[in-house]
Amino acid sequence: MSKLHESTIHHLHPTQLTVGMREVHDKMKRLQHMQPHEQQEFMRAHLIPAVLGPQQRLYITDHHHLGRAAYEADVKTGFFEVQADLSALDMDAFWTEMEKSAWVHPLDEFGVRHHFSSIPNHLEKLKDDPYRSLAGFVRNAGGYEKTHAAFAEFLWADFFRRHIEAEDLHHRFDSAVERAIALAQSDIASTLPGHKKA
Image (cartoon, rainbow, N blue to C red; front, side, top):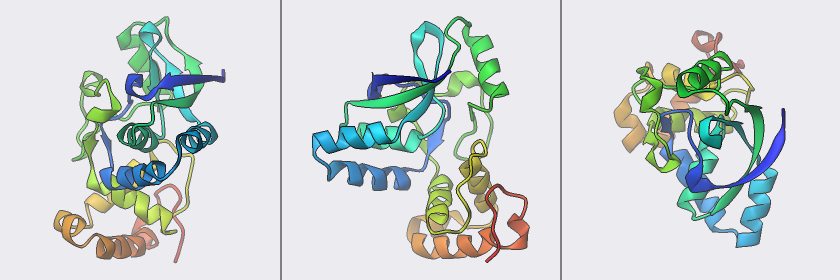
């Protein structure tokens, strides 16, 4: 199933608990420098995948950073490609199906799993995971390949969480990115999606 929807950003439902706010702010600044018609063209060119859930709500399954950035930049609507219609299910069955399809990631900024009911109802309530930002910056710098593997950046974030000190993310972020690139291309990261040798 694939159907194009236009929807208000505020009414979108996340399928995860966190985003990397440093990455969100980068995307937000890019959107803020666009004229309104350019913003709409950009959003149409970057469709956000979603699932139609109970009560006909749209649950986005990827591009949470773009969605949150659009909200922060006061972009009112976005464009969404509906991957499945699960609107006939109750909430418990809905989340069960979402997990089967790897469309939900209920882990917090410490890598701890929570009940699906802990996932916020709106993008603006997502919490910051600085390691998710680190994973995004390392990918953009060529530290590993972009991949369609489910929640690949979160796997990288959890890897970096075990190797890069939290203080460095807050006070020496550029240095932390350089260290993380070297780690990403080392043998200890060889099992992660998108890994590539230096």
